Image (tube, rainbow, N blue to C red; front, side, top):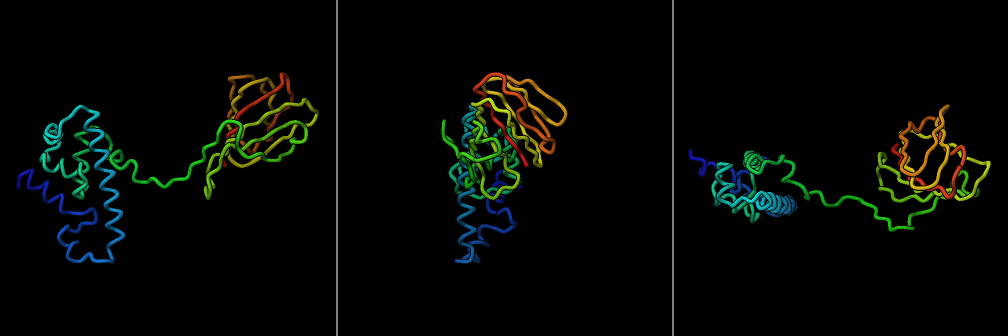
Length: 223
């Protein structure tokens, strides 16, 4: 069998091992949802192949030569009029010099994200808030137990009350302005703008001494 003949055979085989003809004969309404998903996936692959081909300065004929696929097959892929087999996807990825997974980018578009404009974000009351300490949560992801929690902390009032926190997971602190002594367990760190600290959240941690107000730092915890 020639390469071009194999291409046409690949195009007729779906990822589950069926054939396009078989699907047409047995699909019916029961496969309607699956067909809609497949159509979306084909469009994503089409867009990615076209993107990487043009970004690499390749013509359809040049990509065909690189992959051993026919020019007609490249055209069908880029117009989302065929379902590629895994073999065809691997050939395309090799010809484009990208990982196979790059051809699926954009298929999973329904993902949670939080965008927070400057000065916004939800204020949360924590120990120390009444002493001029402001904690502004910059975003959360619903239903994710492993999500990061970014918080912008602003300290504006020197006080003898410094809250210490303990929690599972890790925390990353990046100083934006001001100067303070930050404690973690038995250790103390003098921090100013540009300094950062990565710590184990199980150890008691928090500001010990405020040296230059106002102090602002970004605290990102992962639990």
